[in-house]
Image (cartoon, rainbow, N blue to C red; front, side, top):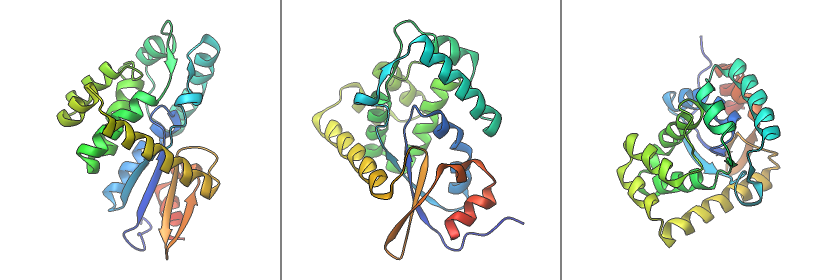
Length: 216
């Protein structure tokens, strides 16, 4: 029998759309939502700006090795299309800035569906092998996934969208720093006015174990 949730908690999800471990955590997040947990996404911009880098051969090999570990642990697929068209792409980039901006466009248009948009972007990258560092590609992904308003806004980003995106990243980074989070994915719960960090390893065990962490 599964461990019941002691309440209907709200959790903040610290993530980056190019984080393979965040992709690996997607099934557990879906289970949380199905169990009635309100999950509020908080992008951290971990791989934007100074955190972005060229996708050279050495980094591609490291990423693929790490991705295979994630697949074995979570069952989330990393396809040959992803390996060939993303990791081995000539002049490729590892930059989550465009995907984070796409999710901010969704957050402004349909905030309750941001995790669905994240899943579509992750599938585009890791399953279909699409270039999610390209705004044009992200616009197409959002449109195909049923986010026309966000797609239109992303196609011609205005200052309001850019400002909202900066604010969301700043908030995510501030929350990470305040709780001493070392990376993503991570969950943050609030109880009695106090925030508590749930480390990433809780997202890769059993669902009952994760619920136990939420109930603690």
